[in-house]
Image (cartoon, rainbow, N blue to C red; front, side, top):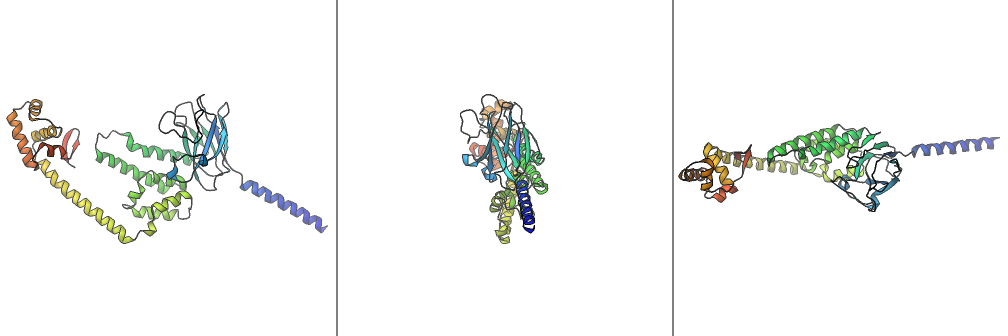
Length: 340
């Protein structure tokens, strides 16, 4: 009797262990509808991107799964090959007759999109027949992807303006966007989306201006040992940077800025010494205009032009038209504003 009970208990134990293993290995998937025209091969490929630096790398070894896309556009890709943590994934398709390990970047035939998921994610993806085919996909089952897409839009924002060669304005917009991306990184609960936001900034350069932020950020995610965070930590080895080294860099930057401001103020006084008419003539000088062309442009005597040019040279401490052309100034709305 005791032996029978022992056998029953053993069988129940084996069955329980089997169920636990099934639950623990209950992998997720990416599925949905992908509408393709007749030029596309009806396969969709899933690549595992190990670090953000490899975002646009492509090889057969990176492709971990694929699925047929049926006549209705339906597909399902299992995620059982993924690590247990969060991963950056890339879905892509290729044209008929093209190698699966190929990407098309930046055209109507762009053939990929990125998704963040883990082994147990269940994500649905649906597109339209608009081009590029992944341009307007709808994604469900991964609410953090809304933040991911917002990060992409935000990082593209500085390039959406025509700055008309005004470098200061472009740098200001980029700085505002960078601060917004850092704020997203600081508040986002998904570790990979958070880190992705920082990768859209110049974090290596920004570290020297705001080391406290990066020290706090790495402290927050100190237990995350994914390849993504390890790569990031190698690029910002906060713990290895001695304090005197940081102070020396800040001192150098402060001296450089002070000298630049001093030089700029000296040059500002020079340009401010020009009269309105002299500034107009100076603009034409910088464009390589001759005295006769200046005379024709402003309907003034040639002798008057020569007098103004001589005065400009004297006030700006230059001796030739070549020096006038090479003199850097900042223009706002087409008029000389100040020296850069």
